[in-house]
Length: 394
Image (cartoon, rainbow, N blue to C red):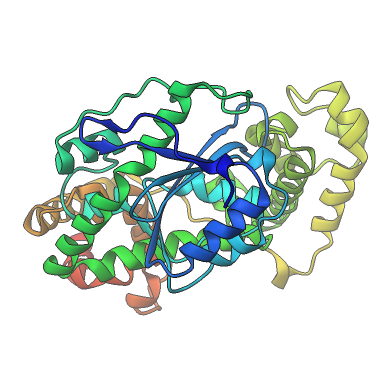
């Protein structure tokens, strides 16, 4: 490697080796990848901006392989091939803190989802250090060091980047190896390392489906969708998938294309022409002019779709009589979380409970195991069943 990647930055900050190496060309990145391919893990982070775009605009990719901090400037890299191979190498664990947005960066820049992943925020929850624990708090817990937070909202696309930005970026990976190794040992000792692996694998699978263009699950996240009949849900599914593709093509936030409420309103009305489409509140003239005919076509396609192709009905919300059963189930879950020394939010979420209760209410003929939401399978099943279902049925 040439002299352009000599270490820069401050030597040590409060006991942390904060030297960093700038990676500014393909040749240096390839040379580093040749070294990193023999590593058991890579501690990683990204810096990006995402305010007026659908995709994150990446400004830096940081890597620490156990010694030394490397700041890759994506604006200078044309060939990510060798780096991509590392990102999907099953023998190299990619270590992140709160990785969801970082995974979106890799999807946008490299069209892949890194795997396998170890998320130190998830690990912190499984070790009862708090739900949604920040990186700063983890560093304080494991290393007794207070990190600065000043560059969180920096302009990471400006060039040149300021020294304070680069130091901040290096610190984001400088501590990760120590935290990862400590958490890995603690989880293994507690018999929870497989829980962490399951959680991270579920997250990876979710983003992999999105990367492959499967947007079918987005329908379930829309408020008010349960009020629609099955045919209207078919319309909403078409419109939701269309909006997702349009937002990605234009690189604009989803709500800049069309808001969720307007999607619901169109699905409810099922307009047959532009005149009927104009009846939708707050639907702008420009949208109707440029997108109206395509929206009408999508509505008509859904209205003529074979019944077996329509989405399943979305269960109605729980009625008032179910509130006491929900409270009993929540109390059971809180007690169980306390026994397990877990944050309650890590063990179960209210929406999972509601889904389970809806399934039990609407599908009496199915076995209880078949009615469990995906989130309540795996390690959570072993910790919650059958007591959770019994609490609901009391």
